[in-house]
Amino acid sequence: MAAIHPSPARGIEVRDELVRRNWASREPGPILVFCIVFVVGVGILALIIQKVVKDRREERAKWEITEIKD
Image (cartoon, rainbow, N blue to C red):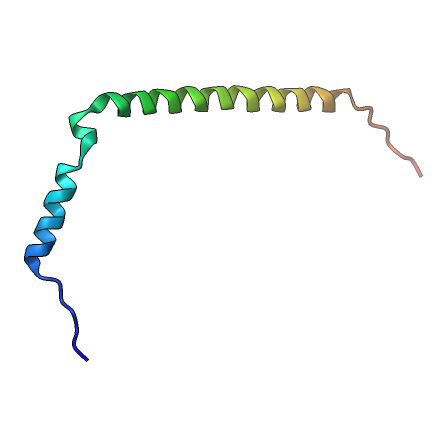
């Protein structure tokens, strides 16, 4: 059975095409916007989680604990 071996020239063509499609280096604006949106989203999510945890701790502090004596 014959094996198919890609030629080295084809690998160079594929690499060159990938380099040409690297739009992030030509237009850094969208990447900056994505990063800012991500950071703001993580910050808002952290605030929500912090509030939920704080509310749970306050609710647990209200519980009355009684010991059972034999």
